[in-house]
Amino acid sequence: MEALSGWGDDFFQGSVVVAQVFVASLILMVIFGLIGAAAKLSGNRLARTIAGAYTVVFRGTPEILVILLLYFGTALTLTAIAQLFNPEIRFIDVPPFWAGTFAIALIVGSYATETFRGAFLGVTPGSIEAAHALGMSNLQVFFYVRVPEMWRLALPAFGNHMLSLIKDTALISIIGLNETLFVAKQAIGATGQPFTMYIVVGLIYLGFSTIITLTVMGLERYGNRHLRQGT
Amino acid sequence: MTSDAPLIRMQAVGKRFGNFQALANIDLTVTSGERIVVCGPSGSGKSTLIRCINRLEKHDAGRIFIGQTELTDAMEDLNAVRREVGMVFQSFNLFPHMTVLKNLMLAQRLVRKITRQEAQDIAMHYLERVRIPEQAKKYPIQLSGGQQQRVAIARALCMKPQVMLFDEPTSALDPEMIHEVLDVMVDLAKDGMTMICVTHEMGFARSVADRVIFMDEGRILEQAPPLDFFQNPRRGRTKQFLSQILQH
Image (cartoon, rainbow over all chains, first blue to last red; front, side, top):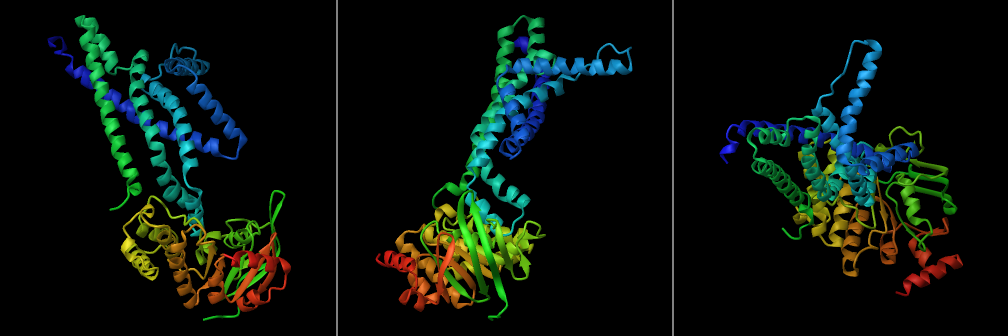
């Protein structure tokens, strides 16, 4: 354990990066998922086709490959574009934080697309009709009836998506993001103690996923409060 | 309270679902304070008829006026019309994630844009009228079917509509709960509410209706005051239908 001394700060910093990637990718994932679900449920054939292609591609390719492609792909593309204007430029670096965050948000967002689609279909059509009959506008029906009914249907699968996100942050170390696994590799290089360092990383991730699981459990209890009999 | 200006006017209204002619050449005028019962075999277009009145279904032939406003695709404010037309469904259709009180307050707050306190006072007033103020804090699933339907009636009344549409309000209920819902509807009728009820409760039709309408295959075959309708049905199809439902 004394091998850990001197690395505590680095692991803490790494954990902060994990949390930051998680929050940013969670927000993006929800946006991608909602857009994907809306497209799949829309009457527009082009939108449905694009959303279909999105889920096929991102659910059907290895996550690490998506991260690498997005990171090097955008970097090379940006460099090529920049060189058109200024041939002096050698290479434009894309921040690994954003490349990685976008990559895992796109991947998990493709799963969330299906989750949200199913949840919207699960909302009872009767209450939506009743809301319209009461004179509520489409926007009001969406935010006050559809979403409050759908989110609890989506929640169990959505909890799994959040766990996928937090674990996928470890993959971003491969493009040089200094999160916990990246810190562990440096620490191993300096101390020669791979077992200790990897265990620390494991415990950090377990801590994060426990928080997520407990949060989802609390939300489920709140979301299903109206299904409990009696008072 | 009754005035002669028609509240609802339907002129030669038609509606198709694919190849199925749900409504054909419907002419119907409803004046304020009138109570109309619509009956007929299933698939005869009764529900479609009243669903066209608040445009949950769009008619594709003829014209429909609510007061002075015509229902069209180009109309500016459909929701203003819907506010005046209350609707009660066969399957209650309460918002499952909200308490009874919230169910009654939501549209008042969003559509009538009144304060929380006002909305709550109005909600409690109508819960008293349907005789279940003590259930205000419960969720719909914790209530019986009859109670849920009474909440649904109260929810529609909270919008202070000019006319109430009932789409088979007692068909999904256990027999012992039917009368508690009908009692509330009778009270409403006594207070002069304009009502159009799709129902097979002929006792209700007898005691409350000004006019009974019989529909078959998307058409109005016969309409008459209840006494006339039950004692001297003119059409063979009406007689056949009445003998079937009055046997039970």
